[in-house]
Image 1 (cartoon, rainbow, N blue to C red):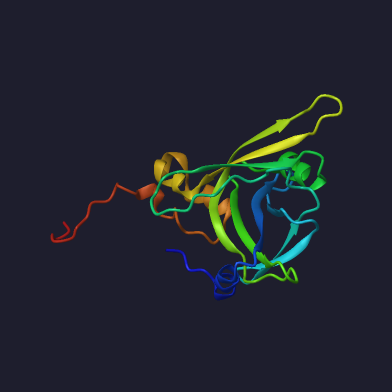
Image 2 (image 1 turned 135 degrees about the vertical axis):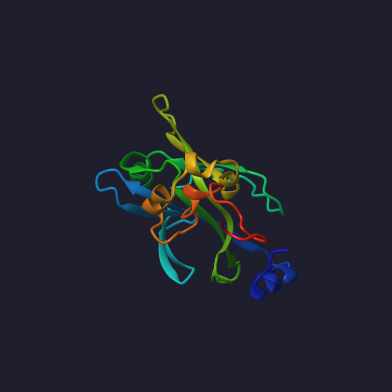
Length: 203
């Protein structure tokens, strides 16, 4: 069971209501330089800084997340691969930068939930992660004259990594190109090629 911060639990117990917002953080790749490029969006009314894991991140708001931008997130125990559809305003310059200026294919994506007090709109506790995954697809909708332009991102949960054959689908080099300090695939190339000597003497 997920631990709920005391301040949030107390606000819920008072039944006074809570203002909830979601924060989307994408670690893409700059097409021009090949370097990592990060950008954040949230469902709030204006740009705001949040501290996530000890690091201050800037999230862009003011209509960037269009309409019902986020689905209902299901949190449960297991390794089921879940897909989430996020909808953004196609006219927001920050969104245009992400999908046209950056390469978001398989880009790591985190979604956090931030809860605020209804009395003074203060943040009750550090944002809680609800999705840790990667971008699996982009769909850009070009509307007719007078319509609304939208950009939809498909996000797969990290459980999708369990469905891949490590040496053929992902390598240590490709992962470190996005996350230099992530050693998750450092032994992918030799996985399954070395015998297990436990209980026996090596030749």
